[in-house]
Length: 80
Image (cartoon, rainbow, N blue to C red; front, side, top):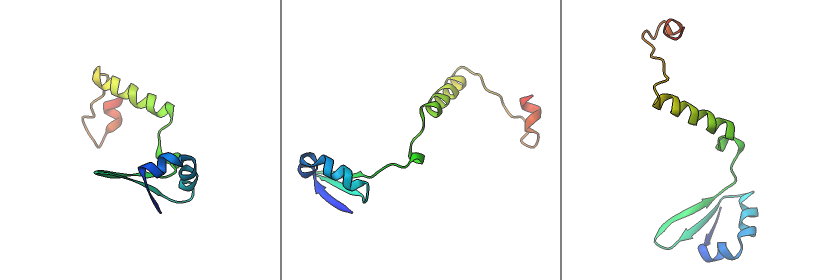
């Protein structure tokens, strides 16, 4: 874990981005919580296709394109 000031981070961004590949870097800020810089794993973010699917689902809900499940023990009866 490395803690650096905002000024130090700005002056040496490349250095600290490379360091973040190996360990977590905290950028301290005056009168604010520090910023954490770490490398994201593939599982940490959604793909474009996943985001589009979520947006479509939200639009479907907004426009009333939903199916209510009347009996939790017989889900298929409500869907089909």
